[in-house]
Image (cartoon, rainbow, N blue to C red; front, side):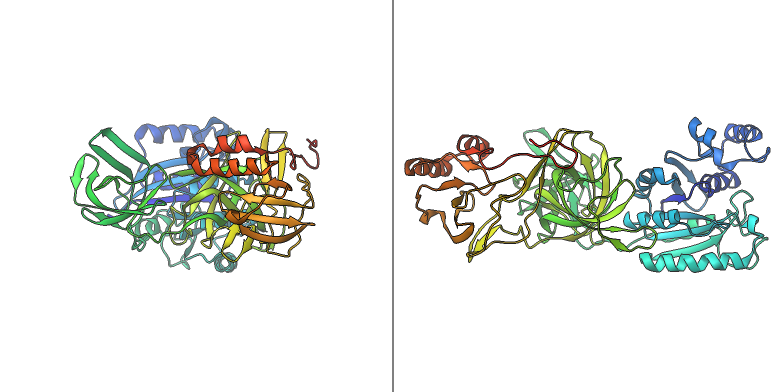
Amino acid sequence: MSGLLKFITCGSVDDGKSTLIGHILYDSKLLYADQEKALLLDSKVGSRGGKIDYSLLLDGLMAEREQGITIDVAYRYFTTDNRSFIVADTPGHEEYTRNMAVGASFADLAIILIDAKQGVLVQTRRHARICALMGIRHFVFAINKMDLVGYKKERYEEILKDIHELSESLALQDVVAIPISATEGDNVTKRSENMPWYTGKAILEHLETVDITEEEGANFYLPVQRVCRPNHEFRGFQGQIESGKVTVGQTIYTLPSNESAKVKGILNGDKEVTEAVNGQAVTIQLDKEVDVSRGCVLSDSAKLPLSKHVTATLLWMDDDKLSVGKEYLVKLGTKKIPGVVESIVYKVDVNSGEHESTETIEKNEIAVCEIAFAEKIVVDEFKKNKTLGEFILIDRVSHMTSACGVVEQVDTKGEKPYFEKGDLKTGGYIFDEFYFNLENASLSKSNTKAKTYHVGDEVPVEGNSFKYPDYFDILSVESGVAVLIRNRKIEDIIALSDYHYIGLSLVDEKGFALKITVKEELEQFLSEYQKIDKTKKVEFHDKWSKFETYRRIICTDNFWMI
């Protein structure tokens, strides 16, 4: 018997997704006697004039039955003599695109139904694009309702041309097109006598034999889900192995701390084993104490990318539009971390695939965006490491999932500095704007940094939410750098140890005014920073920094100014 196949059915409204799966279950004798009896009884009062309505096997919600459409994602498990299956029957209406994306996220294969009368529609293209976005590599385009077009080969071939064009535009890998009638059973569980011109497999035969095995990644990695400490003698790291294998005695690395240690023991459930492989949930003990918590990654390679900036493709799922600069929670692997959508590179037209310039995206739209995390995390391109390259954005107020996405590119060059002279560099957000959203009472920072400033450059001392003097100094205690601004230009960038206070206004790299007016206060400020516990930086900044001297928080367009 082949391994488990997880697949999804999708397509436009009333394309026959539920009917197809229902017919497979019925023809394969996979129903209990009471289920079959209930199906026959319900069908007598249904919409098919007393004929069996196979969709009722999946559309279990009363609201769905009343409307004759699928709203929620219906999951079914079934087994034939040749294979076990889990199928997700998903909504076809555009309003429920996010439900369909949830179903696609778990699947190995997608069956996309096409109405033979209507052909390839915008929704067909949308669903194919989303399935590809979610990492599905195997596709079956089921051209349904062939009975309504007289089982004509010519109509099948017309639609086949559009499927080939769509497959090429999305770079789909394994594509099969099968002409069927879900209601009449043609090419569903057995070859149809009504279409002798079709020589391929029926739907069920293809599902039973399709090979979904993929080449395992060479590197071992395990995102840590939980640190297990039942007593003072045992410390284990629990999670599912997403790639490769691990053995007792092997040297592995902890990321992002980048410490090395040897595997002391492996538990698969409650059994001790000497090795574990991809897909297994295990507990790993190391031979020494390391800095590891939930969200960290164990790997046999120290070369997995660490970054706080990525370019990603997003499927927007929120009723509210995407707010550039708004902070979300990013859930990637087992890591949950604050993140900001810094910019929208372009929006993707789901019909043509063309790239469009935009300042915002709405529900069910797809866009490529630049995202910044609060700190460096282990993240990789989706095509290289699926688990380290797929994520969701969570609204911090409503806790609803706002978007799902995949990482296209990881910025491993490091954060671009605001100011630079030779080896002297400092970052910050002194020229970024601050906005307040009255609807959800949230503060956002808009990243307007377009360049790195050098000696001689003119700086923007005035913006929507900031206004600095023409002459002032910027002190970054964390970077050990001082930037001297004279008449709106950078006169010099020097080491903080070489800085001499001459009475000008002082700000930090974030644009906060420093409460320093005499040389002695500067000396005290620097001395205290050298002595503080790094976990108490907030108290230090509260004592020495003041936000509202040169900054303010504003709202734009239909929001009040503060």
